[in-house]
Length: 76
Image (cartoon, rainbow, N blue to C red; front, side, top):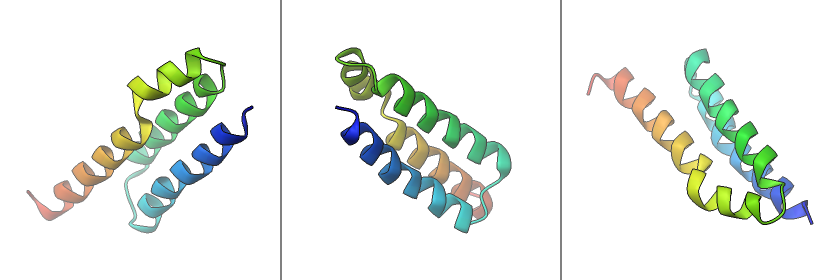
């Protein structure tokens, strides 16, 4: 128990690492980190965490934030 949550959190952090390499603004990075922190923290709670993970989808949220930031840079 919990190992899967940690592994998922590490994998999710790669999206944030990619955003850092792309030079995403600090405010966007802060939101991405907050999404990850909420997901890992609540996701560690047995049963409730699994239900929360299914609904919250921090990776989807973080990719959307990254896409929005990149689109903003391109002026679209």
